[in-house]
Amino acid sequence: MTKYYDLAKGNKEIAIKKAGNIIKTGGLVLFPTETVYGIGADGLNEEAVKKIFIAKGRAQDNPLILHVSDKNMIEKVAKNITNIEKDIIDKFMPGPLTIILKKRKIVPDIVSAGLDTVGIRMPEEEIARNLIKEAKTPLAAPSANISGKPSGTNIKDIFNELNNKVDIILDNGPTKIGVESTVIRVIKGKIHILRPGKITKEDFENLNYKVIIDKHILNKFTEEQKVLSPGVKYKHYAPNSKCILIYSKNNNKIVKATKEISKKYKNPLILCTEKNKDNYKNPLIMGETLEEISKNIFTILRKVDNYNPDIVIIEGVKSEGLGLAIMNRLIRACSYNYIEPK
Ligand code: TXA
Ligand code: MG
Image (cartoon, rainbow, N blue to C red):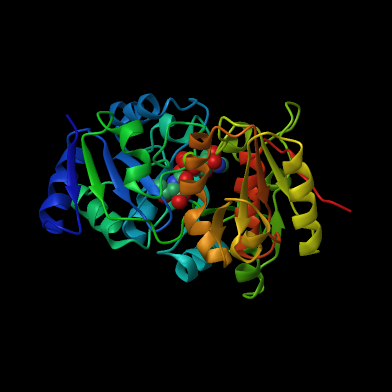
């Protein structure tokens, strides 16, 4: 039986203490971070981490991120940290960032999926950091969702999917950011963005770092390619219904193409930005700003199938700043079915 704690109502400290004990004894805790909810286990306990893969139905070759509460914990699990990596850690952690570092032996192979590296993240969300402190161990934690589904940003969205698969649920309401952390790796002094998030290419460039956007962020992975991040190989975020993503620099062209495509179907569903909502019949509104869209997007993608649409038409956004992270999730939700009307 899963124990559920509503942190807005009950005593937070007691709930976190109980959750910490569950982690220490090899159990699973569904907990909030500032990006999405995570399914956490003791990251140094192989048997505990195995339970995460089973609960999610996750491929064994897709590594997990280790969540730490402070810099000392990073030193315990990662080695050969370069000055530039140290600098990035100082500037962006705690925060919605994951940095790939060389791993120490203490990290079980199951966490890193056999790679010699490990993803490290120090969440900004205090409940997450307090849970790690209480458990006295780094937490291996993927996003809280069954593999392939959109990540959980609200317990309501994932309760049925994960209830009885974890020991404790810590419900802290909707998460602040929505899209998962930016995943980076430093290679030859340059920052490679492997998964875009709230910390953007522009944020790094403003501090004079050289940044390379991994080619898989907006392009489909093909079998022959070597990937820097195994997660890009797997289907993710996609509703059961067929989806198409539309973007143009010219907003009128987005609206025109969306209307034209929708006419060809009996039961189309349109996901649009606030400014375009009056152009369509009963659309789902993603939000006005990029921040709002980022926060809402996974909840909305999870709703789509309830409408039983024969097509889902999604308006894209400009792939800049946080927009790159949104477009990365949307293009994958649409299985790379993307058009730019001319
Ligand atoms: O915001 C987040 O990062 C959330 C919260 C819970 O912290 N976590 C999350 O974890 O999104 P997950 O497992 O759903 O996504 C982790 C991504 C995957 O695409 C995985 O392939 C990649 O990070 N990754 C993990 N370790 C890696 C490594 N050693 N090398 C390359 N990529 C790695
Ligand atoms: Mg995930």
